[in-house]
Image (cartoon, rainbow, N blue to C red):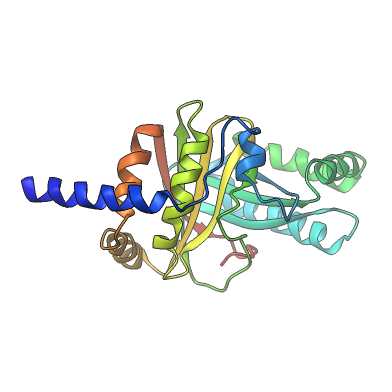
Length: 257
């Protein structure tokens, strides 16, 4: 036990020394949404959680895929689906969709107005409502230090790790992960990192991709062999009120396979 404490102390000292040369955002300068999000893009994201009646899941997936296909074909709609999944482990019979609005809030508003005037989409919503038990969504921004989620070939297993942070801790979370994300890039497992703007607040979503459950275990274990990862975990765990992990399988129509 003493050796572990000495090892952590030494690692902490090195992490502290290196942090002197890492740019940090200043909470006094601006809102954390401006400090932590990407400046070079104006992307806004929406994540949807749909709890589906068990007997309707296949029909729901087919209907959702058709609507996504039509939206992608219509250039008038400034939105695109990033990924669609069904939860494998976590809340059962659940569909998760991640949408991107290129152009931020104006694009979201434009898309909403056009959909409200689209008779086919209104019929789709009526049909979909018959299949749902409940639904929830959040508007998100992407962390500046995460890579933008792009289509990828499969097959992959996806993990959505959701952290509900203590109010006032988002900047510290961002500063810690800005240094730590390099430890989770070697196997191309990092898909995207987001934080909520509307809906449940102080919520962080990290999306990861793995070839298998075994690959997930090996990748996560390898992070602990990298100097500085233990320091990141030590300082970010106290910021968390609760956390949840979903293992998800992409639908056939998902750009993230």
